[in-house]
Length: 230
Image 1 (tube, rainbow, N blue to C red):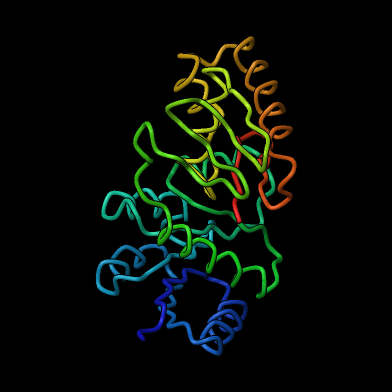
Image 2: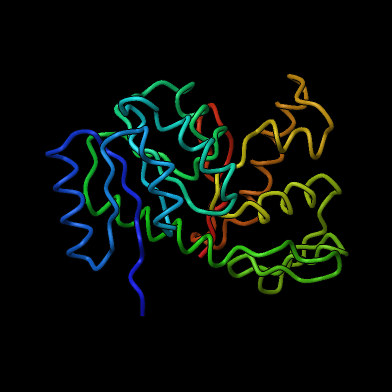
């Protein structure tokens, strides 16, 4: 079985060496680049399974590189590493195509878990189930055509918007879904009133799914939501 190939862009040499050696000790293959200007070339030549990009790099920053990589490959997972803590930086990272975001300093175990999770999501996420199919959500069955959520002996009829919101969350499962994308898809605009309505519907769905503690709708402050499934 071939090793997972990681493109790792980091200009802090000491940190980069530690990360590279640790990942290699876990049987990853690591392509390390210290100059932002060389990352796209390394990506094209190396064809990595995942990219781990420091945001602050010489010549080209991680956000710019993510946009360049997305122009080549829509699917490859991208994880940002950064010392920045502002919400606008987090938002910018996801808008340029990032899948995940780790703030420095970080533990190697956290990085490895994030890499494994991003790769699992890439492998598992497929096209949305056609209307009429039953979607498994933990211990629940979501009957999309009937707009019914069944868990154990309980059958709950969902409203149209509850059903559409659950579909949106499921289609983006294990990824961060921007609030504005949900609002546009379900309400048609992101007005203040609709934004407050979304908060109410999220609370309702959390309550409907609370019997399975493995199912979570996480709020990513200032960005959106992440639907976590077992």
